[in-house]
Length: 354
Ligand SMILES: Nc1ncnc2c1ncn2[C@@H]1O[C@H](COP(=O)(O)OP(=O)(O)OP(=O)(O)O)[C@@H](O)[C@H]1O
Ligand SMILES: [Mg+2]
Image (cartoon, rainbow, N blue to C red; front, side, top):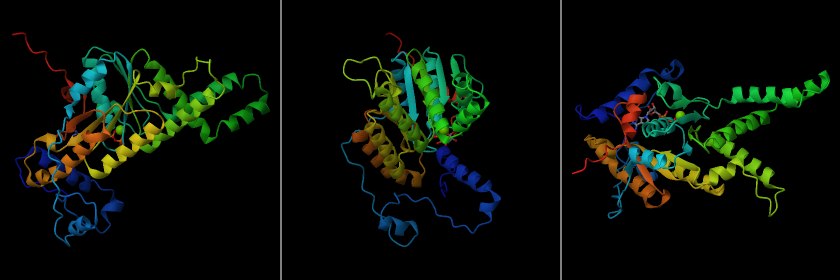
């Protein structure tokens, strides 16, 4: 639990309020359980001394200051939007673990591309996504869609029945339908929908808000399996097979953006995701550090004390993990709606000629 010690600090107040709200709306089954509250500590809770200190049984570990001399060149989200807009079209895949801000960043980048004169299809593979709510109001030039596994699977089954099932007798159709009830069908159907989106990005901007990591890696597996199947019989000289995986590997078409929080475990998980992508020969194009307390301008002493930890994570990201690093501060008001998202990515006014 975080307790703000400066009532005049909007960031600290907002963080405290979030915790209070979450506790106030606990499901009854949880609220009835015995509860222990652990205050937010100013240090990373990794290692035995830190764990002892966390429980109040030992001295606080001295935090090593961030490496001096490491320049932390994290740029604002508007610059990321500028660089993406310069592609003219393409697939922007926003990836990362649960709750780090994928949907928020994807929606903001989509709005940013529209602000720069492009039409954009923002879509999601996350069954639980709230993209539509986050963009309440809508925006000309922005189309919001979703790859819904249930809908895609039914459409796929219907199509197979219409085509392959067309000339079968009743028993044959029943058998085919039974066959299509397997879990593989959903995987294939979602992959087909994903391939359509990848193809669309050849001539327009598609921003893809992905499901939390595990889910997305399954989709990547399907993409890899399809690639191996499709290219198995293509020897040298056969050049006309371009699979969705090849399009994801093509940096002129696809840019993967990894979103993380500037904390030890989230950064390690983002690094693991990056390793998985690299194994598939997909090189993430940039990282976005979201909810940066350092960038939020807070003056709360506890949050200030935690900044050393955050700086270490930023140094880790900027100093080797990421090709390019962008940052979004911890905002006292969660950025929801076209207006709020728009201010995060608004292009800088060109300086007037003097
Ligand atoms: N920079 C920020 N400052 C304050 N609040 C933020 C910021 N970024 C995101 N949020 C809020 O944090 C919550 C989680 O963000 P979001 O839904 O974008 O994450 P996600 O990675 O898409 O989550 P999931 O994995 O569940 O899909 C939301 O309530 C969002 O409004
Ligand atoms: Mg999301």
